[in-house]
Length: 68
Image 1 (cartoon, one colour):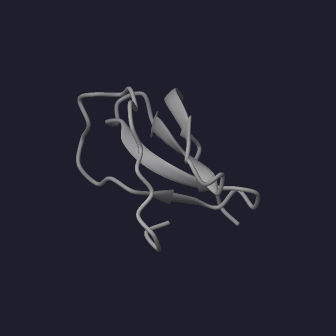
Image 2 (image 1 turned 45 degrees about the horizontal axis):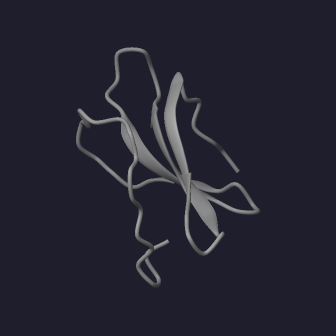
């Protein structure tokens, strides 16, 4: 399974149900930060934002049933 090659990770937060975590990361030095979902335990990744982020800290993540 391909995984992103992140240039920089800024913040990581576990989801309340333990099924994974949310990462604020960018793929290159020049690219904007995005939020990614990393599933646990298989490590599958999926970008969950598609717009440039100006805030890189994750303060609260709410799992919506079936969303991840």
